[in-house]
Length: 281
Image 1 (spheres, helix red, strand yellow):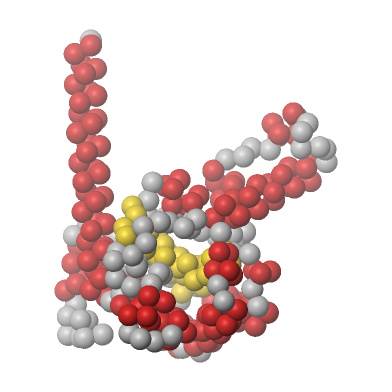
Image 2 (spheres, helix red, strand yellow):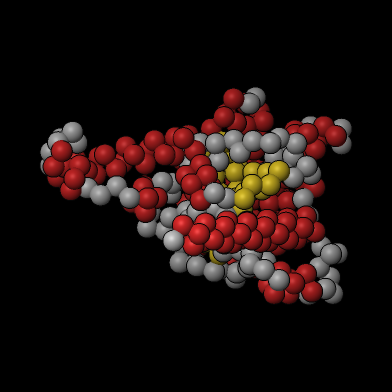
């Protein structure tokens, strides 16, 4: 990482000149197009993308980002060719094994979790995740959520199924019973507890969503946490394997600028409302 060698200023600048987002969600798009651009096959592009993923884990840690969630594999991706799907999971398993045995990463106290419909994943992939989840479960310096076999609508649907089951179980009566519904308070926080990974340590609201590649869609990624929190979304033209620390630094500054613009607009709006109310007195 030549950009970092001998230079601490970028990290200091990030800390001292505005807030960094608490939670960044990455849609890592463009592996196949990057491979095509370089005359390689899709498997090569995914390997390059895995390397970028390992780097982003290091860079976001340096930038003091508390939570990152990566879109490693959506439920829609199962529609791709069998050989490509198998190669993606093989690379994912290799990455998990590498992280699990990398002392530099383990010393960072990163808590790594899988979110998604785990029963759709290969047994070897699930085993690799479980080993890493157990090894990092007590860590709280930073959280990495890996979304695999993930779909946002399915996530919300399964959460409401679990809530309905709990409502019935807690009251011992039919969910349609008015008393039962009144006894069970369905709040935003309560719903969040039942989303993937379905634990007390929820995936928090997304502050900043970044999609690389040339697409301009959020692709059903973390709709509850991102749309519900009015997250800043930035579509970045570079392919995922091309993503560098300079790009992350640039986007964090963009985030800070956008947040400042929103703050100024809200302040001006409040001033106009107050002025109007004063005139009405």
